[in-house]
Length: 381
Length: 78
Image (cartoon, rainbow over all chains, first blue to last red):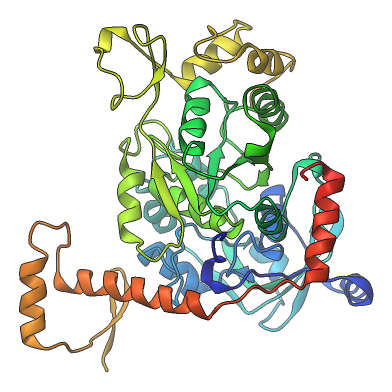
């Protein structure tokens, strides 16, 4: 059986039929609050249950509880704040109980019923989530650029933000039915923000060996400079999966959610989200959601110890490397050879090679994946 | 019941027999738990979430499931 939704119930803040039409009409007469791409996709994620049990943007109590305890106020595990920032001058005059239309690219995408407007401390936020306030951390930089007020409350979706990869986007309701239909009891989720190299392939296959199915769920959306662009990730995964994985063994679907590079906290968040999609297990690799040297390589593994009630099982899979003597991808547990025979895979080095138009060797990246990446003029953010 | 705002959030006090407290204290030596409170919170959370899960049932009707299956077929997932 697939995982129970986080918090016990899969949230659905969508409307259909005449009720939806009426709300759309009413939203035209409401105050409008323009949101950016990241928040627009948060709205859709809330509405479709990706962030269950959240029904809207967090209020102050939940927000502070997440910062301080990595849990919502009701003790449900939650590690990354889902908040809506707003500029003070645009929300002047708005009060608790008011309804505002959240607008993205000029279209009303949701109605927010305000339950609280509050100020926040960016430095405290950054330190709690990232354990640093360094401007070298991309997540910290993003936080420092946010607006000075938070506005919270439940949302009702009027329209999904436009999606380029509509055919590759499934919501938790879809995947839960799909996994059940496929008779998958053990579903392993694979989180990624990169185009796949052979290390990723090894990890996915290692996990798949013990599971009924693999849920490949790359994050699309804002990322730091130098990371792969969304369309490159989608093309590269398609190239790998179609050629090197049995069709009946995986489900590929995108997830529009910004990276935070918050290491251990974000690993928990990634697991919660995949639990809502119905995954029973999630692969947690080396330096999951990390950046630079801000977190230890296995800090994310330790973070899971604090959440016996998470409801999804982390699969801690060791770093994969190529061994010249084994002549294949291995890890330290299964390879008897020394460091001199091991070629460590560096995503950064691979990206640098690709940026120069060079082809990484086949033992590091499948040629079909390289072709897919190099077919783009600008593969990186 | 006392409630206080600790450095990591809100806490309250519950009482357990001293004998049980001592038993747990001995039990958690070298286990990674730094205090009896930490152990008790861990155990209670696990039991509470298991009990909550047993109470939950699926919320989709057969008709809704069939609609989703048709959509998944059109998308090539089935």
